[in-house]
Image (cartoon, rainbow, N blue to C red):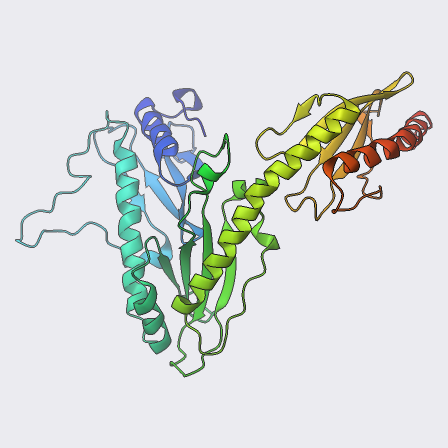
Length: 378
């Protein structure tokens, strides 16, 4: 999100907010901005931040005073965090504690970034302390076995009319997925987490029930590897999280390595298509998930779009034809349905796959031309 004074945001706030959004170690979102006056007609000097935490978002309001730029902003936390006090009133020796608000410099664009980073770090410790105080033998045991793992976040949920539960966000795989992908376009390191949810209140038994488990990844990773396709290993009776994680990570590492190797197979398939259809007019050069070719039958010209799944060649590509000469009432080019009923075998070599598709398209293009001419497509 770009923020500027033209958006009715004071320049010093715009500079700090832009710096925060560009340099924070997680992807932040600004939910809304508003003015301090009751008609919302003044400068926008307050906003709501959505901050990633424990595979969810926490929502904090940041309140500046545009008329007093030298004063540090207030930060209002959520109603469920009324016991969160990140700034001690005094230090251990009784003197006034110094913090990132006590020497606030509104001309420094990095000040808001420092403040939000500090508050989030304190919030991680606050939630960890809350979870550690839960009177649940099983949770205490689980925490003791995994606390040494770097990057674990935990959250105590105590919503009215719902049973209390503790959620863990456990980072998986000590491998740099970004570096495994040539010409990787990702700005942030791609991570896979295991979300683990334990109910609170059950005393430890020799064979406790399995927690709720779910894999969560950054959205960009879907271009390479979909965790929705991963079947989690079974949770055996009497197992704890520290025993479960090594097997899961070993399995995931194989899945990710295989997904990277499949990029080359998709690239070979696109190159084989180019032998039959000519050089693509557009293609995904990194993940090789898409390719578009210009083709013709007589005077009828059309585009052939290929959408190649991450599970290629186990899963076949979807094909869509798009006319270059026929348009609907909104002047959008006519397109065919997604085509998957063409000759295919995952055991074929890419050259044979491309040859059979080319033969199929010779007849399918005539059908598509007829449908366009007769107005059967919209």
